[in-house]
Structure formats: C-alpha cells, structure tokens
Length: 393
Image (cartoon, rainbow, N blue to C red; front, side, top):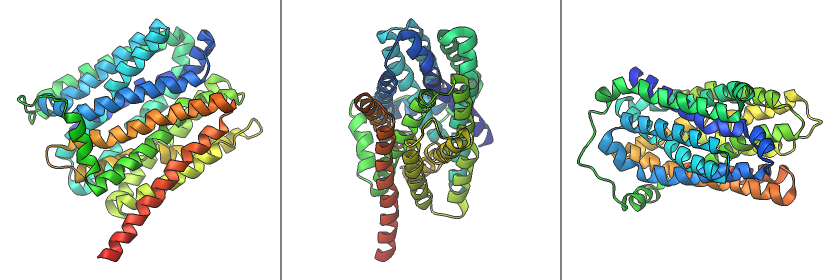
C-alpha cells in the first residue's frame, strides 16, 4: 500500500504542476501576446472539456492496460500538451488545452483504481487524502518555481522544462508496472457505449449522484481559483513574483487540510458531513474574495485565500474515497471517472462563466460571487439527505 501510495503521489504531483503552470505564467503570456485576460478562462474551459471526455471514456483503458500504465500515459500526454503550447498561437494553446487537459484527467481515475485495490476500507479516506495532497504540492511547487523559471527561461522555456519533467515522471514509474498492473484484463476493449454507461453508473445511484453534483460545484470553484487568482492579484497591483508567492503560501494550506479532512472522515465524522462543511466554507470564502481591493492588506487577502484553499482545494481525498467505497468491484476507475466527469463540467463551466462576467462587467467581483452559488446549494443538499435518512430509519 505504501509503495502504491508513493507512486500515485508522484504522478499526481507531476500532473498538478503541468496543469497549473499555464495559470501561474498567464500574466506573462497575456502581456507578450497582447491578449485579453478572459482568454485564460477559455483555455481552462477547453482543458476541462477534454478532461470530461477523457474521464468518461478511460475506464476500459484502465482495465485493459492497468492503472499504472495509464498513469504513465497521462503524464506523457500532459507533457506533449505543455510542449505544443510554445507554438504561441491560437492553435498551439488550443491543442495544449485539449491534449494536456485530456491526458492529465486520466491520472485521478487511474490512481483511484490502484489505491482502491490496496487500501483498507476504514483507512481509505485518509489514504486517498494523503495521495491527493500531491495536487496542492504541485501547485505549491508551481507557484514558487513557475515565475522563476519563466523569468530565467521565458514562458516557453518554462513550459518545455515542465513537459520534460512530466516525461521523466512517466519513466520513473516504469519499474512498478509489472507489480501493480497484474489485474489488467487484455481482452477488454473500448466501446462508444462506455460513455453513456459511465454516466449511467453514477446518475442511477443516489449516493453517487450526490457526489457527482458535489464534484461539479467543488471543481468549478477550484478551477476558477487556480485559473484566475494570480491574474486577479496582478490586477490589484501585485508584482507577478509576489502574487505567485502568496498564491503558493495559500495553496500550501491545502496540504495538511486534505489530510485533516481525511482523518476526520475516517475516524470521527461521516464523510458526507465533512464535505457539507467544506462546501459551505468555500462558498463564504469565494464570495469574500470578490470583495478584494487594492486597499486590502496582504495579510487579509492571504487569510481569506487560505480559507478558500483549505476548502476548495482540499476536498478531493474524501470525495474520491467515498466514490471508491460505493463503486462496484473492479469498476473503481470507471465510476471515479464518471463522478469526476461532472467535476469537469464544473471546471469547464466555471472559468468560462467567470470569463464572460469579466468581459461583460470589466471587473472580477461578479465572477467570484457566482461561484459561491453552486457550493451553497451542495452544502445544504449534503445535509438534507442525511436528516431524511435518519427520519426513515
């Protein structure tokens, strides 16, 4: 279990760095290309759309080739997407979002399939949460090193260096392939019917459907936070290096919080209650984020951002462990992909809606406020079924 956890932590860290770097260096790209900041949301919207299809259809590939092999494929595709972005025109960024976003999306279903096999059920929320700390770890690394790499190598050099790191990560996993892909089924083939079957496996089960809607709201807030927070701080007057540093410090909060929420969900509270608290916490903090101005101190902005990070960037482990618990045997990867596909719809809709509101209003406040609405709804809905179930019993 510990070897599997370390391997999946490694691949998710590389995937996280590759996914977040475009957001961290976006101000440099915008300046060089004289682009509108709203294009950042379009880039991440395309990435989310590609992720949606990848996660809906990856289940058969995970069963056929193995979770570890598909983890390697994920990193290779992400690296290729990063590399093609250096073309620097609309085609390059579009291809980068689609290839890289689709590739990175496979990493979580693959890791869930592997850890679902080896993690004891009672410890699953904690194990999945520890693995998912790789995501804020990657964001932290990217926030610290991204601006420095871009300053030394240019934004194109930073993208190429990250692409090389993703490929190196795929190579590092190779020695473990035989050990962890012994459950693969070579006779399994991909079919177009996998797409509706994956969605049906989620929406026809009440508890999985609730997780899917939670994933939609949570991923929408997280995607907007990652895509726009650094650009937002730069718009408020921060230097890029200072904005990247503050962003990294805030995201660092998510690392211990992910473990904390998993620990609570394993030993003290029902995972549903933990997720309800996270939903309401991110709703409040993201709404307050829209009130920032140049008059706010760095400490005040950092405090609100830390709460947002502790909620919107910290929910993954406990939601994924619940998904793995509810999935049929041998279908953890496919069902996880189905739940996460709803998250990708949120990741697609969130940045695009934010971009539209930014374009229409010329300010960031409306976009942050709208992000809070789905999170409030999910927080309340996660509490209501619990009360209903108790009355029925």
